[in-house]
Amino acid sequence: MGNHFEEPQATQAWIEAMASNCPGLEILTGDALYADTGLAQAMVDRGKDYTFKLKKTNPNSKTM
Image (tube, rainbow, N blue to C red; front, side, top):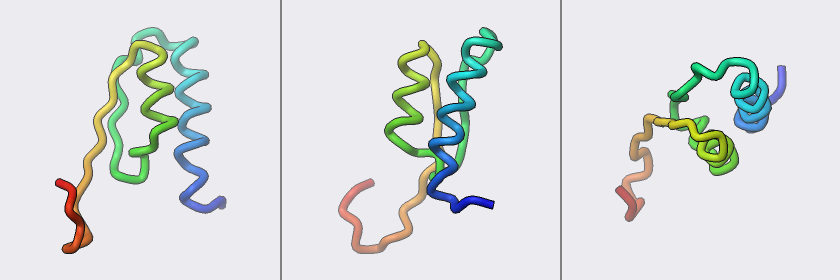
């Protein structure tokens, strides 16, 4: 099994294949692991939508 950092890239390849084979694919949902710029861009480039669930885990973070 590969490490979890490879999963967004593998998912991006899957999105590219599915977008051409399944025109009904309209939205991708996922957890924070999939909140990857390349994956999100692949969805947008194909006219699709995405939503990722994020949570603040660092109490010192100034975002959110």
